[in-house]
Image (cartoon, rainbow, N blue to C red; front, side, top):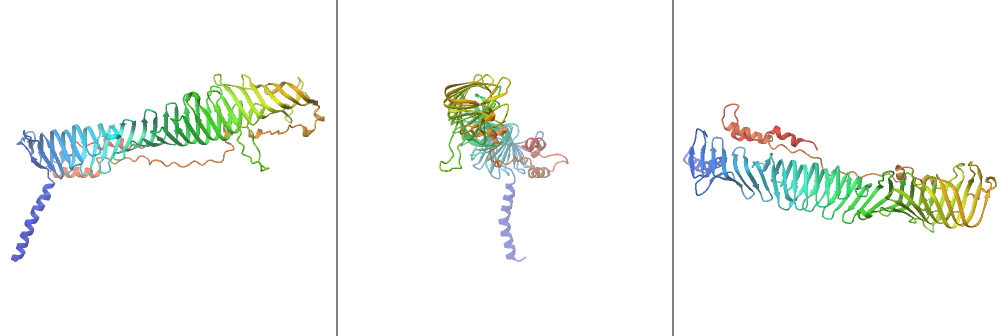
Length: 590
């Protein structure tokens, strides 16, 4: 080697050696300050005992992390430190942790803290009795209960918690409770993003506010904007209304909720239920709108009432609810049923209106006006408007009013070929205790056709007449007796002498094929319904164990560097959380 080569070698060595020494020294825990250093081989073999003095605490550093304490045990061979008393661990300007005790390995870069542990970062504060901090993965973890405080989002407590600092995400497991000024959330599995305030709920969960309680087993809640949705076993309780559906959206600022697919809205005060596949609920306005196979049910002890239409709206305070059913509306009860373009029902007064909304075109000779219609046992009643009045306390029908073009038809019960008919301008009917029409009065321009029979039910003849009004008494749906007032003309004809074309009054319209005979019949004219597919949230994905394979490799490296007797473990693994114990709560399927 010539002189120039030797000189170059010496220059390179002079520059390279300090660099390598410095790089290697960074891997070792460094003691920056100690007031007193002692050796206690009896109690701490191979370690140095560092104690503070009156001026300042013991200060230790390792690769950007600084630690202060009153007393420290430094195991230089294992690159491990135990810190006691008023411990403070700081990493840059992001992590500040205080506790009574800390263990830290320079090999695994895992810290274990215990005793009044408080970890702060710019986003939140974690408090726990014990806490693990993985500096390499930038994760904090507790398994024996902890509390997280996040400014306006509130305070969160749980048995198990994990903080992913790089993505500002918390994952809480078991007995999770979030409390803030506006709400309280309880859940089994709870993912929370501290920068956005977004919370993802899994397992049985409730969101409680002053005005509502929401339950779900899979849901999302924006803790800042107070909005969210639920997609599994979803239920919202608004004081006196319970909303259930496959998917629920709610805004707690306005007490608004919407629901999609298989919806049930229960009025707990008025004992009524609304069903359908899309609904909107405005709590402050005391209103519910529902469509897609909409069905309103008034629950009664003896016989419930069902109303179906394209759209149903329920409005009013609990003591004055009103039900409005629009377009192709139908009503069913075992003893009475009806059909109209619109049905309005007042639950306080017991008044139900069947209203006609003309859809026919006057210039179209093929179009027809379909008047509101009701059936009671054997009787069919039509008119421009029908009012049905019920006694809510007794849960029975009271009376019936038909306005303009009233027409009542029933089959002759014996022959089943002829029809008893009465028409006039106005009809007033009264029901007996069995909800059967007992008496009917038809006023102004009354016309009638009756199949008159004797006591043996033999046909006497066909009675046709005109009068000012008619009063009729029924017995089990059959005409028992009738009285005409201000009769204009009329006669009783033998059936054989009665012209066929005279057997039907003007505007006769027998619509028995439209009569609903069951709740299912209310839907028989509806077009096929295709429900939207609700994707919602993804299923719960169990997190990887905090003690994963990568951390176990670091622990194994610490064990090998310690040069311990075979089978012994290094100090870096003595407070390691048990992987077996953690596996169950993390891996549970939702």
